[in-house]
Length: 87
Image (cartoon, rainbow, N blue to C red; front, side, top):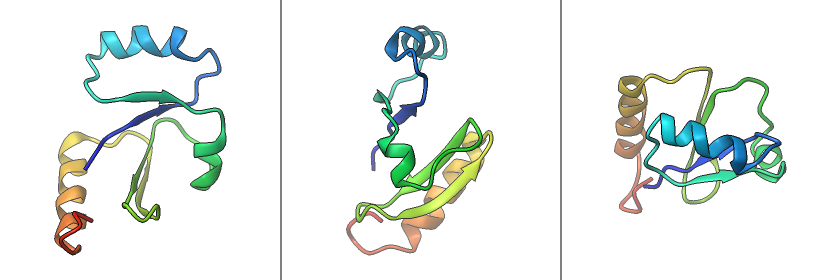
């Protein structure tokens, strides 16, 4: 399982980097040129969390803040519903 933060910031990493450092984000971050958001149905509200399985399908979508405990519970649920591939 891999977490990747996808920024929709038009200023690119010049805006993302200070925020990531301040928040001590310890997972990979990328800046979307619009293709990622479009592929998964667009993003209307920030923050949004999309959990995507290895086959590329959305397994869960949470619009708005996703507290860590709820995210952990959702991941455990999804991982429990899967085969040995991890999803």
